[in-house]
Image (cartoon, helix red, strand yellow):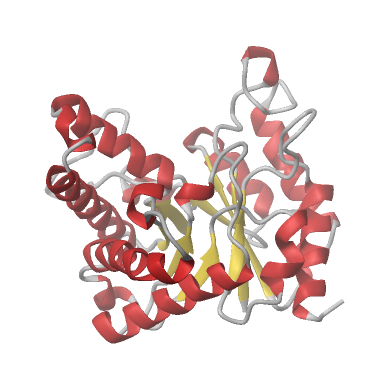
Length: 307
């Protein structure tokens, strides 16, 4: 079974006020998206599982419209949680994992590059030298990994599965040939994985953790994405690291953006267990369109040799 994850970011904001939701009612839009995915037959594909991460405001509507045929996830959880006889939930602006689970989520995406950048930015606002001093930067990165680890554990404790995102920055990857970059890539990913996955083995009899690989250096306009050889190397490396260092067997999906242009290639890679979709259209009226998701899935299945 391979996984297609869909991260619908800030789709609760209509275009009329600067967002990307094509309808004035985001709750009606998410219900329509799930109904369209059902009509496309995506819920009936036996070798692909679909999970959608949505903003907190859209979770109830998404859960209702999913009818249990698609998994719904939160876009992160807080590092602390509510518990009977303990904290009742004094976490204004933060989503406890227990709340996400109670709303009907079965997954959470944690450690996305946008989240890591935000956390590192808070540290840098306090001590700007972390962006310039390599030693301070590494300490800050480890601090962020520790916070991510707490979020992962809170999600698992609350019964959620986790898509944990990791990936190397341009600075961590460095210059030179791919052969020269490989040890630096391994070091960056080793640190993220070992620090972010501490303690997860206690939950894996009943819960899942999937690793989403984001090549952070390649994300953004004008950037060149990695080719199949690069992605295969990293996926195999991640599986090797978590197996040898932590005794875990985890799936790895490509989190740098599954799209129509790379879907067949990603489907053909045996070491890669799926992908993460954000937008389906990056020009014109950018956004997420179920019909185009269907086209991406068709290309992916062609790459797997199933169409």
